[in-house]
Length: 364
Image (cartoon, rainbow, N blue to C red; front, side, top):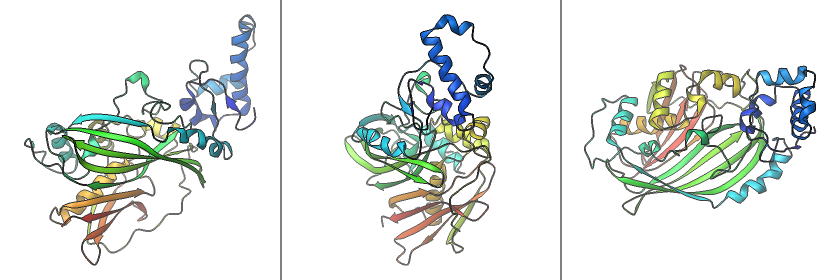
């Protein structure tokens, strides 16, 4: 089967693709051969001799129900061709409703090193704590093998297996308060693709308007990136950038697996790379559990506010440069600009290279 040829029907494509690149073409051909024989000549299938390629392939592939939606194996050429198809999702909208729950606020405070005091109704919540809200409430049967809702409904059916936050930018127009009933109106604003050192990349930009009582409180854009799987021996092919030496404040964080699990639970995030070690290492090819991008971003803005007497913040943006992993300490730091009206933020791992950069603009 030629690279880029269509798979006719693989409902479990997202689950099967991450290991496909480590298997032989012969094994893949054997699966298709058995499928078509089973479909058209079921009697002969029973008499087929065992196929060693097929058995080796199945050892590590859960090949599920037979064949449903035509998708393309992501290659350098057809991923660009598919972008026009994915761009048909631009303009799709969804609205999620939620409640600013005092228990979640107290739990987040504990997770970020506070005392977990129970907040009063009407208390303003900290900037970016709305990241706990508006998680898609997909039934278990509607989840993909990575723990996210299956693609093809609101999100386009991008076949690249790895998904992560590339960054976000947000304007804080007015605070949300404990007890608020809130709604998030989301539209897919853009979809683009490119090829980097690690292979095919597809970027999906989501534009959110967060309201309470009909009043717009937060405007934000989130960028998700979908990438190819990597082999088990993870290597970051990007060129690392050293973090600045001078900082006005700095704090070290050590995200152990318990912390990552608690943050996943708090944000109703089912992505298995954050709590399922065999999945993170054997399927997605990471060396360890992955620290959530929003968790790092929360520490960027939290450390900034604590170091600046909780000055009100007008806007916050961040960009991910490299993943961070469980049990590996990282630093969050920042430096005020000359006017002291804004600050540059960054997170760096043990190698002192940038994992995330950010910026805040103060409102006062």
